[in-house]
Length: 169
Image 1 (cartoon, rainbow, N blue to C red):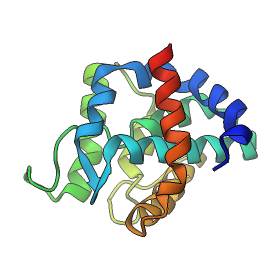
Image 2 (cartoon, helix red, strand yellow):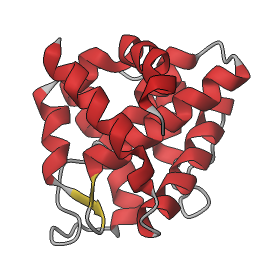
Image 3 (cartoon, rainbow, N blue to C red):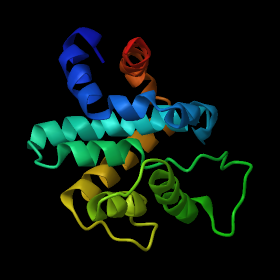
Image 4 (cartoon, one colour):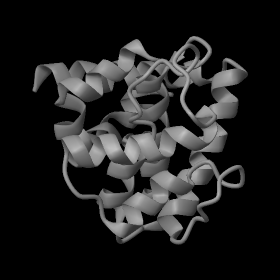
């Protein structure tokens, strides 16, 4: 991605998410692996930025709520490759993310809760019930494939610029 072309988009993205990105617990997501060498922080930011661009294209009225939920969709805060739970990670982590978000940031809207709980569709029980949930589900699949194929590195300049700007705030 060309940073010159993305500068205004990054400004608008940070207006929606900057407070979350400055949070120390959100920053701690940099220590957890998500897709092989990709961290949960990188993946979540990549997904949220992709969702932001989709909402922008669609002129979505709930852009702020959708992008913020997208940023926190994998806010499960554990090393899933080594830390096991009573359920497989694929089903457990969305519920843990909702629990962590509500414990740390407060109440999620019904739409945001459904977005997070259903982002693993069709491998989960929860069905996407809003356009925001479908947008997140699609973006998460696209970004996960890019992570595994090692092409998500094209997002690295934008990721680094977002983090640079967050630290400058």
